Image 1 (tube, rainbow, N blue to C red):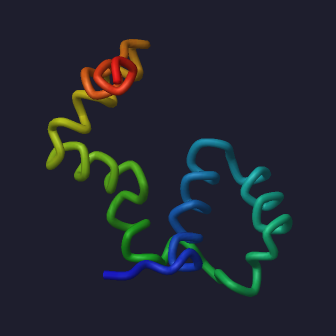
Image 2 (cartoon, rainbow, N blue to C red; image 1 turned 45 degrees about the horizontal axis):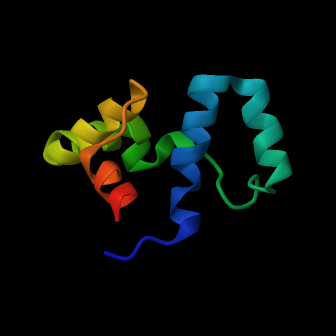
Length: 88
């Protein structure tokens, strides 16, 4: 499935509204001229299903190696893949 960038605007708008607030969402929409492009981001099926947070949770649940590397990154550790790259 090929996803176009404009298909992701509702997810990004939901993220901005959820984690930064309505005022920041209004500024974001104005800056990127999204009022005409996206009428109501809350009607997007992926937003209704939990948005970026749900997508990321599903991805990490199904990609254990990436989850392990992500957790290591959050803890300031380097992964074994990164260590291997540094040695070559």
